[in-house]
Structures are given as structure tokens and as C-alpha cells.
Image 1 (cartoon, one colour):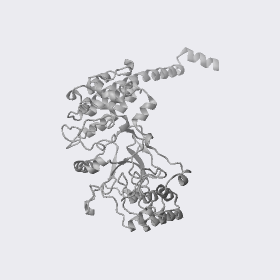
Image 2 (cartoon, helix red, strand yellow; image 1 turned 180 degrees about the horizontal axis):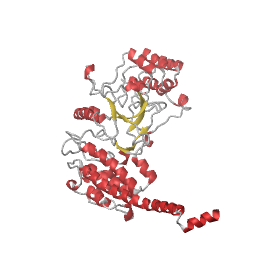
Image 3 (tube, one colour; image 1 turned 135 degrees about the vertical axis):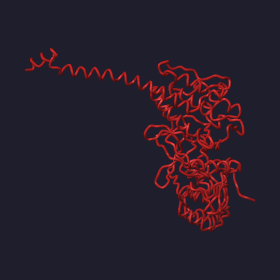
Image 4 (cartoon, one colour; image 1 turned 120 degrees about the vertical axis):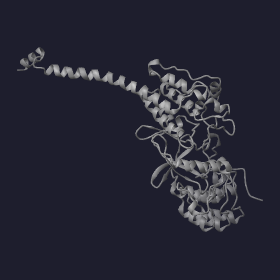
Length: 459
């Protein structure tokens, strides 16, 4: 019978496949209490974490199971592989530790060692027969490995931090910071989704646009599968809006054009349009020049390519941010590219208003408002909405998708508004400069009586 207990070892580095913890899930063991307060099985985990060879030998000699696993399915070998304990790994393997044991998230000691860049441990585990986790897209012929494939050993997650709602992590790849998204079990275990994901990756490597985050590659030949994109250190647009509040109309129009151009590129892609469906400020990133780039499209939900598509199940607020999703999605109806236009309208209004849509409502209440044909109120003074902007927003969040404009049309409308604003701004500045120049000429004019009187006084 397999040894297991209802405890959880949380000291030190955790499983490479473990999802981000919620606050209520964290169970930290007091380091000072461990040697006295726990039984031999968890003590084995602790000693593996600490690298105490003598203590481990003593426990194993007393009959402690070397393959004991905690409630998360992690063994002492997992712990040692994470913690750079090469000598402990060697001891555990010599005493019969299973080299390819998987934890509850599917990670093996080798996968953990690869994740934490423990090269000596990697070599040792491979010497004892450890095999990399095979992904459902794994190919046996090296010539069939896709061009975009990235070796996970090249990704360094040391000191990694989470970005973009916890879905991406920063890593180093060939000396460059990149953003890495680990795909969930729903993709790995569903054959149809794996096929769709394979098609999506072939498409992503062809996408090039200044307002779309650049795809760099993917890990598909081993688990966990990952998406690797460029990393933009200025962060997401949600944080920017929260910090800045309501934007000036000129700034809002500039940002709106960035978003619209990126989305138009995705929607106009041939032969198949790419629907984002999760367009919201957290999925829009700022580059070093201050421009915006659309991010995280077609990854979490896979590629949407038909004229209309439908969710496999009704969407919930746990799946996405409810404040920016079109009503037809929440009604679980078929939808098309116009869902992104609806989301765009809400983002554009938020830029002017300085608050998220229906900010006074709980998030799970917002979809009901959209379905009831309610829209966020316009509270900002009319002067903050240049001529034609409010009308454009109202068209974009129209109840009927067919009445919402395309992004190509939106770009044209925004350009017109931007040109009018620029023209007004030039006329506000030019007269002042003109009068300043006239004043200088007046003072230098020899026929100007005041100029001559000044010269005579100075003489």
C-alpha cells in the first residue's frame, strides 16, 4: 500500500507546475517547530529541504518510506530536486526513490530540477533514467519539431515574478527577459484543444504588428507546455489607468488608435480572423515608447476562427473580467469579431471617465446589466468628449452586433476626431507665438516711436 499522509510540506521551493496560491491556501510550517513537532515522514521532507544527509540516513534506516508522499503527492526527491540538493538526490536514488514520481500537478523531480535550473541534479536524474514529461504534441522525429520550439532548459525562472493577472511569469531566455504562460490541464488533456492549439501556434509565429505583443516561441515537446512572448516592463494598461485616472482626450484617442490598429490586424487576418474575446485593460500592455500592444489573445481560450463561434460552456466571472464582455457571450450565443468592438467601447469610455464600467456594481452583477441593455453612464463633462466620440462609443456597444462598426471603420473615425483635436490645438498655440513675434518686431522697428525713445534714453 502506497504511503501518504494528509499533511502538506510548504517549506522551500514548490512544484514547478503548482498554480499560484490563494491567501487561504497557504499553510506555512514554522521552521523552528519542524524538528520537534512532526512525524518522521514530514521530517524526511524537511531534512531533504535542509540537505541533512546524516538525518535522512537515520530516518531511512529506521524504516521511513523513501517514497512517502504528502497530500500534494510530493516526495523527498521532489524537494531535493527543487533545492539544489545534489547529494541528497543521490542518496535518495541510492535508497530506492522512484525517479519519475508525479505530484498532484503532474510534475516530476526532473521537471522541477529543469524549472529551477539545477543542472547537476538534472544530469544525475537523467543518469538514473528520468525522462522528460511528454506533452501531447510531442513528436519522435527531430525533423518534425516545429520552428517555434523552445527548449525549457533555456528558460530561467530564478527570481521569477507573476505578471498580467498571474497568468504570465517573467523568465530569462538567452539573456533576455520574456513573458511565459504555462498552459492548463484543460488544454493538455483535451485532444481537440491540442489540435486547435497546434494550429494556433503555427499562426502566432506569422503575426507581426507594432500594436500586438510579439510571440517568440513555445514549449510543446515536454510538459508543462508554455507560450513565450516579449516582455514589456511598463506593465499593463489596467495599472496605468488606475494610477492616472481620467485621461486627456488627445491621450485617450492616441491609446484608442493603438488598440484599434492591433485589433484590426487580428480581425483582418487571412484566411481566418482572430477573435480576442477577453479584450480588457489587463490584457493590453505598454511598450517603452508609451504605445499600447494587445496581449494574451487566443491563448487561454485557443483560436476562434469561424464566422461565428460559441463557448463550450456558459462563461463565468471566474473565467474572465465580466466588466468588458459582450452580452451575447454571457447569453452563451454564437458570436463573432464584434464582441471585441463591444469591449473596446468600454475601455475607451473608461479612459475618459477615469473609472471602470459600472464601477459601483459587483463584478458578477455587470453581465446582467449588459443583458438588460444597460450601459455605463457618461458622467464626465461634455467637453471631455470631442465631437463624435460619444456617438462612436454608443455604436460600438450597440445591442446588435451587426450594428457595431468594424475596427477599420473605428480607426477612420478616430483619425478624424484626432485631426480635429490637433487642428484646434495648433490654433490655440499659433496665435500666441504670432503675437510674441509681432511684439519682438515692434520693439526693433526703427520707425516705432517707443523704440526710438527707448534708444535715446539709453544713449
